[in-house]
Image 1: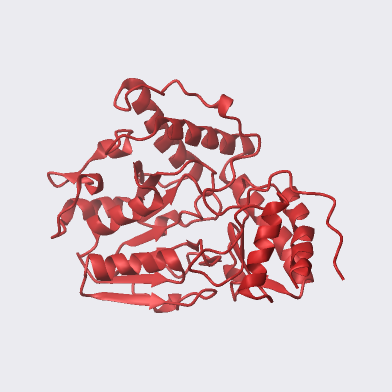
Image 2 (image 1 turned 180 degrees about the vertical axis):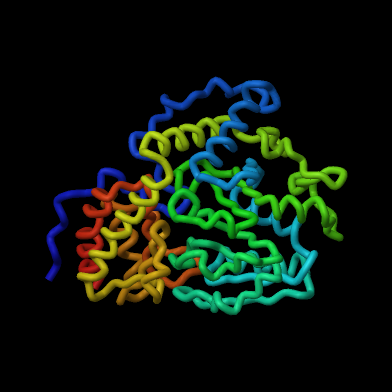
Length: 373
């Protein structure tokens, strides 16, 4: 017997895991567009780019000496810039438990073709054995598996006395999860994830240890211009002071600054983390009460509070019909699992999503499931 359609719909049906929903109350008319049509090398443009770096460091509470830069090509560009510049000085361990981590495995083993590489790979829903990682090696990993909904539970597994570098793809974790900055040497993310910004730009955060590696080691392979972080054996400091490697979109920069101002207005980083965790709690309550749905993450301590991935007692075709139904009802857009992931649902729970919209969505999931049985 079919269930009646729920009466209440989410006010904002944007639950995509990237690009993610814009912040509540977002209005293009509120953006400061005084930089549009102006040179990014000029005083005004450079000041806006520098503020993006300075405000990021302040809101995140980065340790003294950590540098923040805007780089090309989203989080992917930031990660690959780090890999091409830093790896090769010592053995490497790379961890993967979903599609993006697998991309870094491919980069390191098939593109850079490094010889002394240990890959630690787990299936979707699981983590590799973190206790086995050797931190005398350079270690490459994602903090939150965006396509599996599995995050590392904390940073306790990262050795304080490491001699290698930790290179962390944190694109769906920064601004949503507590990160142990002192244990991370390279951190990357993109604007279109947790803050709901625009795409095409990446953020690269370097610890003093990463800078030391850059200035003491030269990789044996050529580096294209958009990857170069040093000149004459010294860090190009301008990259971390608003002088980008190539031309950025100043409209996207204005959008990012608006998002940072929103974070400050909410009370800072802790408010965003709390809101994201409260959003996850809405879905957890539904999962706990519903026999046909569960988290893809096998360990509750590793369930992502941003890209929440769910498995269903349903066929791939039934799940596809559910997603289409919810889209046609203007209830939830873009919530199918990632193309390389197991069939299921993926619902963004970052702070740009309101808990009230998730609460409204849950009965619709129940209705759509029943409609496809």
